[in-house]
Image (cartoon, rainbow, N blue to C red; front, side, top):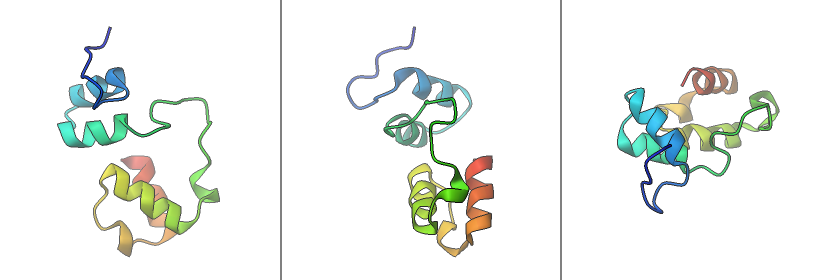
Length: 82
């Protein structure tokens, strides 16, 4: 069972998994606190169907640097590899 990190972390289990993978506390918290974080099964809209503005927002949320200078194809590649 995941440790309770208080109300500042919405998904304690995912937060711990990300920290175990070497992610910083800040970055792990940002990802674990997203409303759809940890959902599986293809519930999220495909990147190709999202607007560049939506992809920029997602890249910003998860801490991808230089996202504003990337085209849509580059953003999708970075989001999938991040």
